[in-house]
Image (cartoon, rainbow over all chains, first blue to last red; front, side, top):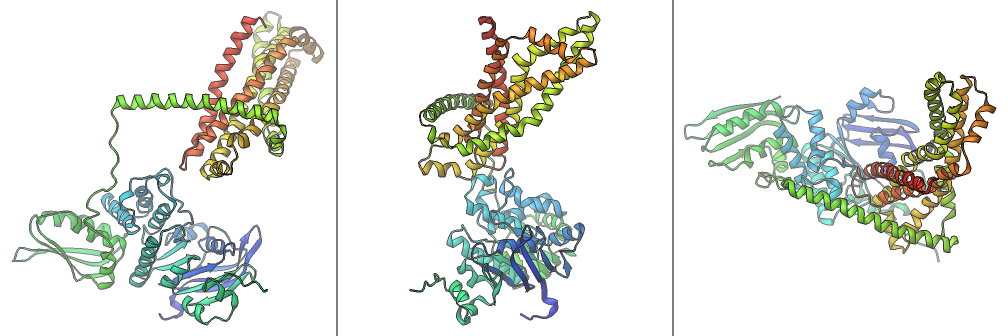
Length: 257
Length: 370
């Protein structure tokens, strides 16, 4: 993949992310290329989800700028932000489905709001998205009637409803069985390879990191910053930083005797 | 832009040539035309030629699936779709998408619905009786083992139920006193009997309105809050966690709330009585009845048994409102609207119970000549 400047779709510049003015992560800068499957990794509490909330414009960063396809979402007014947000889909950690709607209605909603498609086309597209995550037999169920992993899969289907060019997924594979998780990885790769969809995935599931992701950053709570950036397979083999090696090789911290 | 052109070959096949960009923005251009052309082809074989398609995302794939999924006499074939898009299309199974796998269940007949509703009401009454038993046992346990009560929780809830409710209780009671005084003073003045307004307000506030208004406010504020708090804990499996830790949810969650409500409601009732009288006294100033006269008249008209009649009720009201609030919380089912439903049911059942029990009190006091 060429890394010309035109191919940069998201640029994070000197961002401090945190809550109530207290930064969990400081001075983060990185770039995400179009069509790339990009991972934000780190231990729990290291600020991965916080960073994602800032990148999708839900929370303002304490400092810094975020450019999505050239527009700065930190300084954007409400109308611009809405226009940018319409181009990406987000899957939240818990699925965040609307509890009063069936799965099909949940996935139909963005299509009904943002497209001019006839009703039967919306219906078919929504059911295809649910088939993609293996939920074709549960279209009429309410989210509360399903297990946590199924709700999560429906959340992914809803995020993909409009075929956005950027998809943000917050821990998509946690709570999924290995078979579903693997098929999700395959779907992610297919969309990225064939349609050039950009994925930004918050995760600490090493299985899917090595299979699906092109490039990752590794956040560290103590260092308050990025301690590694690059191809996860190379980081596993070549990194000399003990923290990075421990993370990618799934080793417990070594306690000196 | 997307376009479709339809042609029929001499060997009897119908060709549907799609071209351009197929996504959710352009799909409306070709959706209906393509479906119509396919339907009109009847039993002839259909060839969907995708050579001219330069982009096709999930929405575009829906068009191919739509043409493939309906069972028809003639064969359907998609040709010349670029490999990148063909891979995406291969993810879907048109035969699976041909019919709804999760249709809505058929509605029950009306008789069955009525029976179902009756059984729900009957079950609710049973759980209420069970809950009363469980609650009595928990309170009895708390009396015998006061150290087992989580007093830190009790004081925290006391503050929320009692102190935090003072402004709203004051506002409503003051308004009630003023309105009662004003509405009765105007006609009574015609008979020169405005001094008896003091009797009316004294008796009405102390015997009925003070306890009742306080209890209704309690139902709206704290009953709903109890149901929502415990309901949220139920949804988050916190109640299950308590049970598996061997802690009885009624003892752990309900007892502190009931104790707090029973301690605070009588105090709030006293406060409400007082502020109501103050509102009345203030209004009567404008009918040239001074405070001292008003107070003396109240003192003469109201005796201790009137005050106690209202005060005793406030304990019972507190028990009812807090109890039903906690019960509705514990009954919370799953789903996004479940906690809201529980809070609503707590307020509605609380007020219904208040009305019923207040009526029983009225009859009892009448019989006992209090």
